[in-house]
Length: 254
Image 1 (tube, one colour):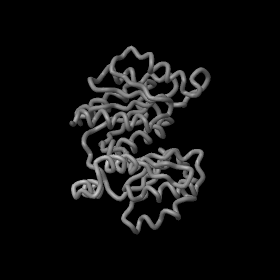
Image 2: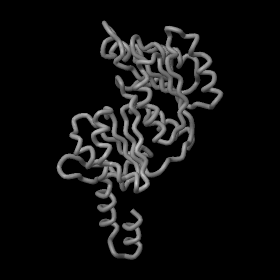
Image 3: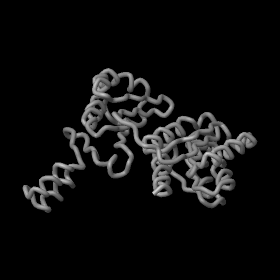
Image 4: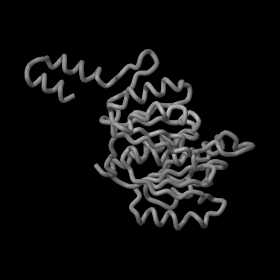
């Protein structure tokens, strides 16, 4: 970008040419299978995220290496076995100053050569331990988007006395957004929203059986919540919740 602007300043290219270059530089094509949004990190504060499912191991390796120049990339829904199969091909990035961090619970791989400044705090809460993988996905993504995260897991309505001290501590820490992850009947976001005066993001999970199987009972319950101040993302969408929470936090801090 600086190189293009310098050429405009020196009169080497026209404004129209510069505009075209700035538009096209945001997309990098990797052979015929991927077109990467390499400007996403600068534009939004969230690094490019690659969904691992449906891609071959070599394709993931090529994408990661192709985006390494940008400084950060996330690979989501990457199972441990697949991570282990591609890890060796990424080893040389460590010599170039990159960190390779894999969260097995969240199934997220983060490759980065720098940390981002943390701008505020988000609270992440789960109803049960089975909801933790989705919550961990939200936590990792929110942190990579520049947020500090305080987490409290397994504090659902089945033993609601566990919740209140966690909420109090998070509010004392000046948490500005809550991500509440729940399966089964999905009641926890409504409870939390009734206790706090900041936005609550409900994340239904596919944890459940019978009428709750697949997460649809939890989704419908959250959408139907009588507590104001709740937004709801898709089933098991920890990634979307993390990005949304960080986006809200940026507006609060701006």
